Length: 184
Image (cartoon, rainbow, N blue to C red; front, side):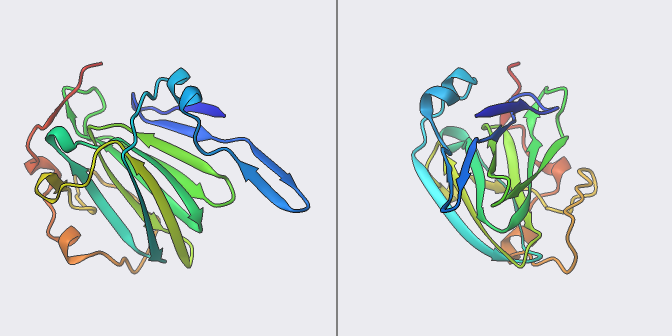
């Protein structure tokens, strides 16, 4: 497993080793000890899987308080552009984002700690997206930032966007409340 630091402290890309032969491949997608050695000491309590069609944008979501989630994300089939936006007040990268291509071919994962809004866009005809969470889903603690907020200026790499009504009603970035503090 190769752990790659990004330009934003705390967000990591995980390149797993892939063992291929005539039968197919084998990938170790999670190993608690290897993750701890890399600085990811996360206790995962919930796994989620979504299937989406080309052009779908999901996000930018986050949860607050005791339900703030760290997420370990990967694609089981298809291709997505995964986005993590730093929303930690006082962070030198506040309002900046990391964008990572996740595909079923590159077997890449991204670790997004609490204090980040998360979203993705589907670039293939369809995609199956999987993520492990460090806290349970809590509707009352869920928050969203408008995916096309001009202050964030995220390039989602898709046309004819398909976005839920809920995500279209999300907060603008400048109106979010300071729920997370940067401790770096």
